[in-house]
Length: 231
Image 1: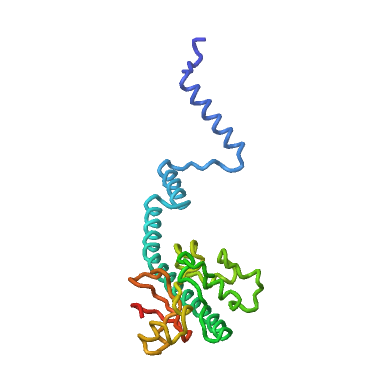
Image 2: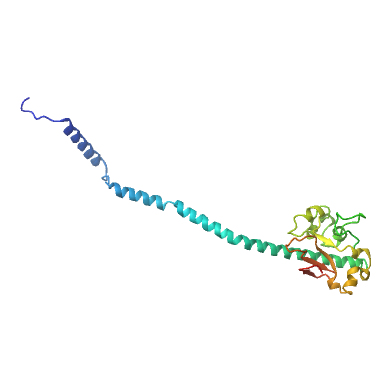
């Protein structure tokens, strides 16, 4: 008709969209919030930041941990070395007690044994086998594992020794001459003019604790001493 108003497609589309929006708002109990785009991005970034470490923060934490480990490791190593020295000296002290019991039973004579089991041209019983009955007197014979160095025979193992004991089942070198002749006829008895506090019986067979010479020494009078140089 000539009098009818003409409606463009664009205005029809806008009207439909407006009606759809009004319909959705009416159907929801709470109107949808309309946040500006900038505020939305800001909140999103804040949530991501609060949810965990950033890469830089993570690298800083790793660096701090690595620094602390670098500081603590030398201190822990030093504590372990000192602990090994103490246990080694304690082992020698217990072996010294066994020597006292042995010499009391055999009228002052020391066992006739090689300096080390591998240096044994006369096929003598090693010193740990000779002393086994006098070590941990309450232990049964089954606990004296001389062959493999377990059980009560662990006292012949220095905790810092990773070379000698697996082969010899003994970390200590024995003064073989003590078992070969009476005490007063031995070479060191003559050298030290009968001073038994300076005549060694057993000592570290290697430089387990650093330095240039063996450290822990057991003497005839049963005392154990750390020596900087051989007696």
